[in-house]
Image 1 (cartoon, helix red, strand yellow):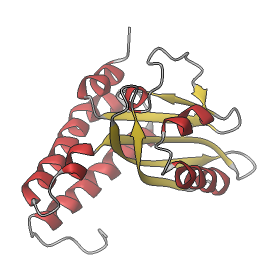
Image 2 (tube, rainbow, N blue to C red; image 1 turned 45 degrees about the vertical axis):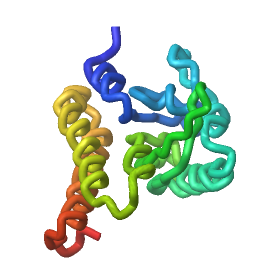
Image 3 (cartoon, rainbow, N blue to C red; image 1 turned 90 degrees about the horizontal axis):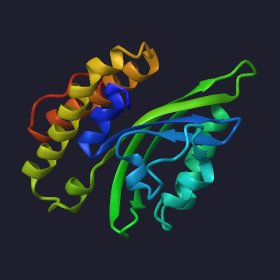
Image 4 (cartoon, rainbow, N blue to C red; image 1 turned 30 degrees about the horizontal axis):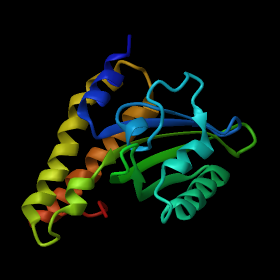
Length: 187
C-alpha cells in the first residue's frame, strides 16, 4: 500500500518527488514522474538507473540536463532545471524540477532529493495570457499545500524544506504576475 504522500502525489497527476543515490547512480521517483518520463510505473524499489531518467528527457534537452545533474552531484549543490520529457504515448511535457544535493563524509554529493511539477499547460498557453500563468502557479501551489502535511509526517526535514522553498518561489511568481510588490530578497 503506498504511503499517503505517494498517493497524494500520484493523484495530483503533475507533481512528484525524486531521490538519487549518487554512489549507486539510481533514482527513485514518486507521483507523476514515472509516467512523465515514460518509465515503468512499477519500477523496483531500488530505483532506476540514472541513465533511464535521462532517456526519459526529451532528446533536445538531454545533454543540458545531464550536465546540470553532473554539476549538482559533483558540487553537492542545488539542482534546478526546466526541461521537456516524452511520455510513453510520445506526448511532450514541460517539467520544472528543484532539488538539493546532500554532501557525504568526503564533501562530495551523496544523495539528491527534490520536487518536480508538470508545467505543460502553462508553457503551451498564450504567453500574453497572465490568467493562464496565474492558474498554473495556483494549481501547483494547491497541490503542494495539500501534500505538505503528509510530508511533515515523514520526518524528512529536507522534503519539508523543498516544499516550503517551492511554495515561497510560487508565491513570488504569483506576486509578480498580479502586480503586487515582491519582498526584498525574494528574487
